[in-house]
Length: 114
Image 1 (cartoon, rainbow, N blue to C red):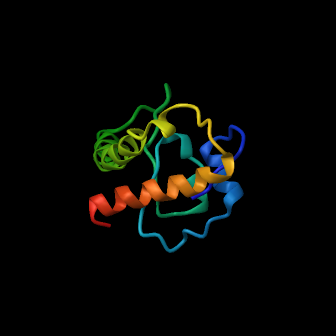
Image 2: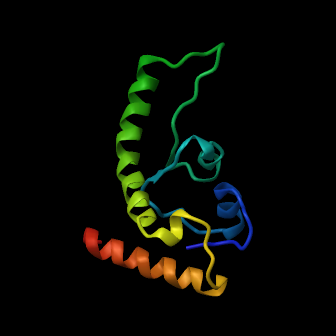
Image 3: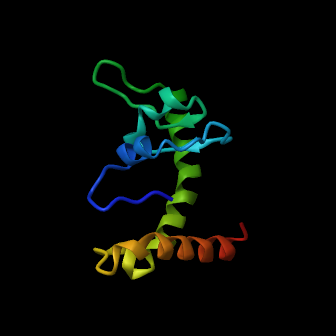
């Protein structure tokens, strides 16, 4: 898990961390991570439309299937945010934030059977 002291966009933090996730089977990401597919071909992001090129029925079906899969991930994020310290500004010692986040992630993983 990677954390920063100051505000940083997730994609920027991901690039700075230089994680080796090339062996990952599937990477599900939202539309903020469009460049991720250039780095990791197994990354899946929703397809975007424009005024000149609307989405085809196949693209809409792909986006729908992807959003159904991603909703499971978003539900896990919601479980993390039930811990009040992650849904508001963190006001405790910064050096313990990573430890606490890992502990809570472990509790949630144990609860889900991972």
